[in-house]
Image (cartoon, rainbow over all chains, first blue to last red; front, side):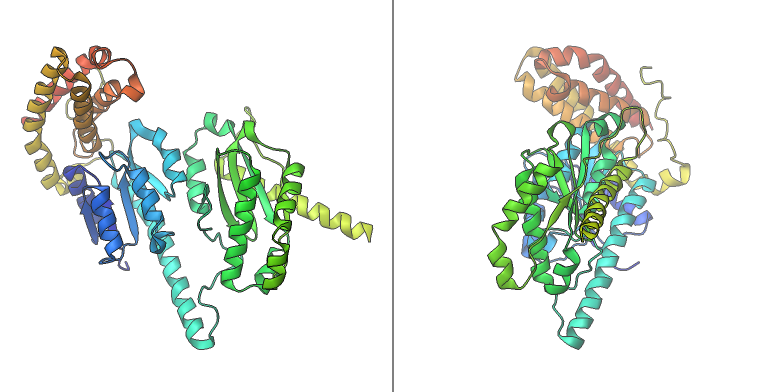
Length: 320
Length: 123
């Protein structure tokens, strides 16, 4: 196993000792433990050690794990570092706030090595894939002077600095935590930049990421609610989970997004990047008597917006 | 027995080899248990006498939270389950009411938890 350095934060020394033993049993030996959020931030900000993953207890005196998660996310080098929250079975109501603060996943106390192995294994694979991507990026940059930030069109790239927008993996893990009843109160709605591939080809990586952040902030501005969680899923598509009751008509959303994006027309022209055109899918809500898995709901939302785009293309073709 | 679990039953899925690997942690847990019993006893007197009852109840919940986070993994499933109940019953967010009300609801579970912790000392 490649080196995988973990920083664990919990105010209970016995839990930290237990974590150390269980992690060692499943093959993770590079662990640093601290007992408070303040201590963790001091180490992180000093840059004396690089961490590949954070394990944060949610309920700690002083700065709790959710606040610590938010502050770690504000450190530029840790915008994408996996953060796994640790919560008691009694305290699952904290989970939503943890995901909204940028958590990647969570595990419950009391821990068992099977769950820990699965969850940490998932984030270790994620870190490994990113390392391989970074190595390739460095190689390309050295050989050809291509832009430093190498990104893929298909990948769910994290969009930085837009409130309520989290990593796609975080959104998936969040919907998985919703039970059937809670899922019933939600709807998934997808947005697609129809000319994303043109923008991807016309822009360098930095401009493409800026475009995604711009579109994300425009979408967020049209949602008219603070109760949502959105992520970029790749291929120009965003998926948003929101309360079923606060769903807005997709056509109204589409028009408002177009108007707001139109305000940036000149800027896009100067950059030589096509103005993003966004379509909105039909909101997908689970029926009470039909079983839909949480992840299938996200897929259905994406399928719906693709359908909207395809129908629109067909109509344009027929008109001509 | 309220939880229906046998005294100090191993956590579901735990096996002797697993527990043996965790023996140093288990020992440390047992070592801290006596101090925790004494602390809960002292806090219980404070709650019952109305001496800063809110803070005392919160501190008992805090101790219970720490116990419930590790006990089952270390082979003390009943202790973990009782500690989780005590934490929930004493937590104002979960249970509501004044410290005195919450204490009245939690008291039998606290007694059972103290008994179960006493048994840990004999483990």
